[in-house]
Length: 346
Image 1 (cartoon, rainbow, N blue to C red):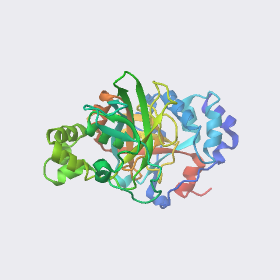
Image 2: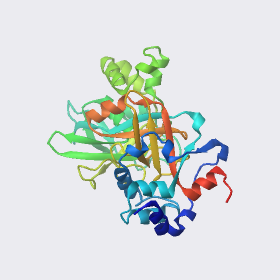
Image 3: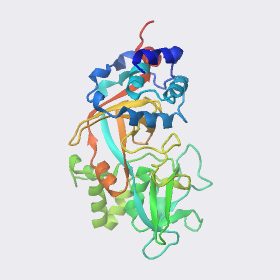
Image 4: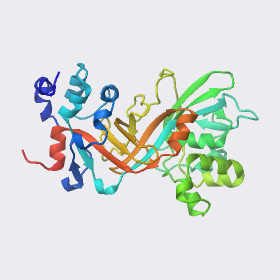
């Protein structure tokens, strides 16, 4: 089916609009053309469409409903995106920053032992909503001991810390079983970067800091390392997840499994969840591909801020841990939504 046929099938789809949360003036955003998207023609649009369709199960906004219905009819992917969406660069002067995240795999046990001494906690039932609770230092100081809130015990406190940053993970238990955990709650304190704290102390330059550098430093300096981790007062609780197949990615902010190198975490104040996002990432390993906004994160703030999901396990972690790259994000919005955002007259 060609582009003309798609328009005929779509009918009134182009009149649909999406209620966006952003309130910035139209001059803060710039319309773009598909032929100006670097690498657009070479991408696997069918792979991106499959992830978009998965998001359709939870996408919000009246514009997505008819587009999701049409996408499910088996339309060719590239003409679908080019016909019913318009590329918009949100606040291009902000400058994009891309980072990466992953689903870690940890070693643990159901019962505490000499090796497995560091708990993953489920959410306390008395955790207040919308206000700060105990800090990381207070919780790890024994505040929750004796309340039977432990999901599992882990052999490495640094890995527990990074599990909380990632928000989900897998645990290989000592008896051979495996469990998966996902985000279950938060203590209400803001996230503070321990990497930036190392830079502030003069121990590293900003370009030297990575997740692996932090891990190594904390392990070499256990007492100082524990104090360093406590400079981040934020603490994440988990829940055990048994509804995912082994090949599924972790659950994102939309309540659905996310997809390696096709899912991106965004700031929903600027980018609606479920929207296609064209990524032009620079750095040592440039990336040009269409992703879907399926996740969020406490450190992901701003119109040009994106966190790319790199997959599961150590290899994914090593790759994600080195990503801190410039570029640009281009959001694909339903055409009428884009017109309204840009302040274009009929």
